[in-house]
Length: 241
Image (cartoon, rainbow, N blue to C red; front, top):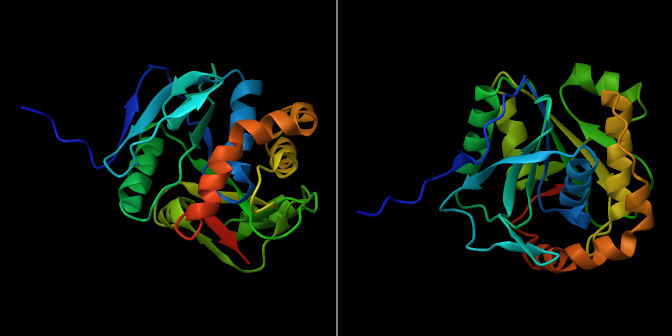
């Protein structure tokens, strides 16, 4: 008897003790800012893969990077178990989005996480070297002290919007950090701007020099995914101001 594929579940590939981690997440959006930034954070913090998302709502796609096969929706942790990262390198349709959102936040709650930070790009406007945020009121004021501006109004759609909505009714703080980004090509400068904002706000020290210097390599590695985002952007994540 075959087991039915799950609605959505975080399948843990490695057991590690997590200590109420802050979770950084990046999904496919304008300039692929989320995946580019999260991929860089994973590399620089030498994070280990600890799980993957299994769901019948994920398109039947896998990712090759430098010839290596990998799952397109992955969960990582640093060795200390204090920082986690979620990276998704495929475009997601609206169908089943609530199942994916619930699964992510159930997993975060189980691990004692109190904060999830989504990194994303704002489409259709030129990058201005600034980081913007949307969060609950008290946090927005604190971020302003770290030179992270409030977005006055707009819509956050797709899985980032779903996660932020659900955070409002759960005991976990939802934040999004945004940068204006190229809408059709991977934007490593926008990704670097967001990581620098994380460095200021979370007292981290993630070097962004590679992101600035290796634009061509990043462009080539993420260009196919960027093209898929352009084709599907009506149904994928995004921030509209």
